[in-house]
Image 1 (cartoon, rainbow, N blue to C red):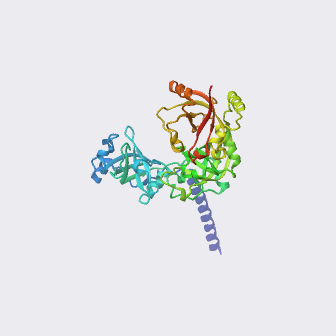
Image 2: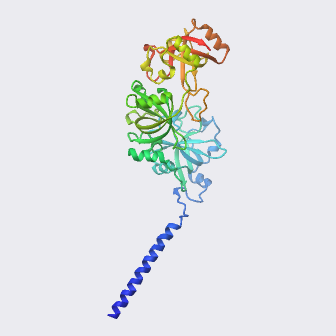
Amino acid sequence: MKRLWIIMVILLLSGCNAAEQGEKSSKEVEKTPSTVTKTIGNLKEGYTFDEFMEDQEVSLKGTDIPYRVEEEFTDQSIALEGKAQLGRYYNYGFNKLEGSHFVIKVTKKDELDWYVYLPREEYPDLFEALKKGPVDVYATVSIPKEYFETGQGHLSIVEEILFKQSDVEEKPLDDELADYMKEHSVDLTARDILYDLKGMSDRPFALSGNAQLVTYRYASAYKDLEPTHFVLSVRDTVNSEEQLWRIVFDRMKYKELYEQALGGMVHVNVTAMVEEDRFTEYSGTNAVGQDVEFEPLERYADTSVEGQSYMEENGLSFIGREVLYDPISYIEEPFFVEGTAEMDPYATASGEYEDLQNTHFRMDIVEDPYGEQYVDYPRALEGWTLYLDRQKYRHIYEKLSQEKYLGVMVTARIPRDRYKMGQGGTALVENVVIK
């Protein structure tokens, strides 16, 4: 019996000691921060660029190729070294590769930048690493003759690439967007799909930023929706590159949003989706809005006192801004435009107005909707391209020929037979007064 009691005491003491050690070990883990740097990629530490070039049997460096003489180096292997980050530059002969390739911009101090296009299916690990942040790369690339176009600059296709990425702190979502995503059950942000629009199409994503109305010149992939939808240009403030998105919204469902945006910029949290059947190599960052929260920012400037008098005297009820973003609702209706006009004497009539080339001249009025009011929001400036009869408005033509700018007040109209979806602010002038 005494022996049994001794064994029990030993077991109890051992258990207490183990528990204390376990608790101490747990506390030590919490207190001791990790000092290990996690590095991913296939570029080994200590492996030099010269060794890479030797292994790849390449003697030509990117620095050996000056700007605008790229054609002399087509179909040759070129070695690049630098810091790489994801981009969205699909241009020149490479403009049809977005669906199949992602693009990186390789930079190095005091050297020209290179854009390199990589097949998505062959480099998924590199793509995922780049979505987290920049990586160091050694690469061999070529400028294929079949893709080359004069003036393209340093655009290339990958041949071989090694990369290395140390721990990258991903930019956390701001609380506002995180709360919105949780409330609306959205898992993806705009950045999650930005560099693979086709592969991530038909999946809802969340976007937060300042927004303004724009015309369908900025969202041509959806221009057939102009009669029923409006376009907001949203600057993604969560993305460090502040990417611009053009989101189309149903005019009836989001009538209140449209009315607020017509009067000034708005801050929005949006759920949107890139529709697969509308994706093209040229569609850019266009999407359809599915849900939105918004709050107004500063209001646009009012029509000037002089302009209000002109409208009253000429029986005008609508201003150019109303017509610009909903043209089909104002077909054949006279409307008011004021601002500073300028004329390019070499500009030609185009689109539905092409037949006016010999009888009319063109002037453009583009004004900041905030007028003289200072606001620090980046924004697009849109306006009107107006056609005037050369005979009737000869005095305006002569004035604009002599002076670069001319303050005017205008009565304009969009003829039914000249309206085309997506054409933006284009109209005929019925009356004009110099300020």
